[in-house]
Length: 260
Length: 253
Ligand SMILES: Nc1ncnc2c1ncn2[C@@H]1O[C@H](COP(=O)(O)OP(=O)(O)O)[C@@H](O)[C@H]1O
Ligand SMILES: [Mg+2]
Image (cartoon, rainbow over all chains, first blue to last red; front, side, top):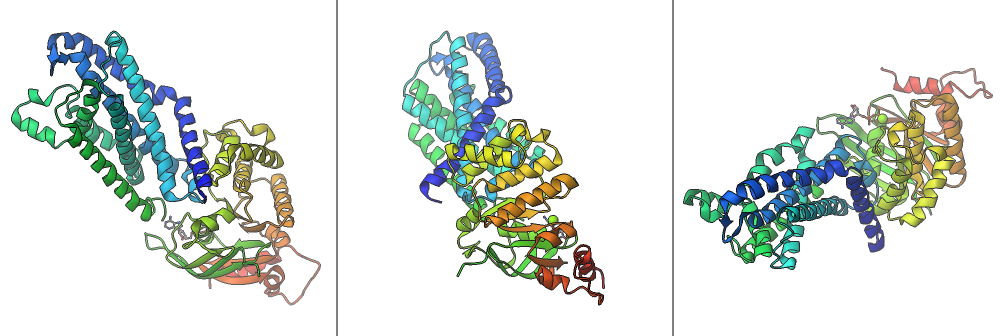
């Protein structure tokens, strides 16, 4: 396929997924908006006033980037794992792409792009909702860093979700990782607290949690400071992107678990 | 000069569970042909089609589509084929018009070109009224015709149909055959598998019969019918004869 045709195929996959996510927005966008509203209400407004400040900013301001990140991570992961799994498992309409000249790497790009779009839109919605609770105050240190971290994080978790979708044999297989791995890593990755407030053994564990770096890099974009250096966070993010692309490349070469 | 639509050489397939589905199959579908691949359930027909269209990995052997090796030039090979698979494999929540247009997209056809083409195909196949309902609301025969429209959106030179008339009632089956006949008269090569032997007998130029992963007969329709072990030749009669050859060749012992 020439570049123009590759582009049309990519656009077709992405457009189809975006149309789908907007059609069922109650399932795709609303849940994150509702749960994050509850978090803002409980942690930000009710408990936040008792907590006072975290790293020198009021608690609500501190917690917003973390909750946006939570939404981004969970939705971009859920999007690729679910769309890939359901198109291979339920209707088997993944065959529509498999019989076409669309190369496997482009198919992956199409699914991942859908996950990135959903993650970015959901993140933006959660950020918008947060404005309601912060009385429209939002500190932005660097929009470039915010967007960069948001998009790269979407990429990481869309790729990871795809790996999950490829390996899953049953519908439960795509719920296990989010419940038992992803959610704990995000919650323990410093959404709600600064690592400074932890005992040293817990700090040590936190430093081995990759989500910790993503959340802190993202938070840096808003506040201009964080628990870790920006360059370290960026390096870890890049390493994750590279590792996941390598894994997906391997899966493509072995047939994505799609062909007998 | 022109390469055959499909050239399969010594194809073998062993599934992961150890099933030897194909034990060395060689088969040529000439360009412009209407080719029937017949065989009892489990003979390996769907496996041959799956390998030829990129849905199943082969174990050994080679496959060329209009001269393009499926390993060396998979994109060129795939671009020539339209597949109507044995199982319904579209998303039942999507609309027929979108299913067909998107399929065009996967072949690199821009929407503005795919839309009128998809509408025309769906009308030609009697789905003009159903373009905008959800796929799940179509009857069995309509689903099959939607799959034919989807397989034709990129104007393939080679249409492969795996049991397209299974579960389709007589009237509609006839309509479908007429449609396929019209397509071959326009130069499209067709390979199909079917259980309806009388129909195959009337339509197909070439026939191959496969049993337990091996080709047991292969030739023009007349050559195959000549295998009929009945000395009282009755030349005017065509119908039921293919069935008898089929049974002779595929029955146990
Ligand atoms: N995915 C699969 N895994 C294991 N065995 C399979 C699979 N698909 C088909 N088979 C086996 O391969 C053989 C050929 O099947 P198939 O090609 O579907 O035959 P047909 O289409 O002629 O009915 C059968 O024995 C079938 O059980
Ligand atoms: Mg079959």
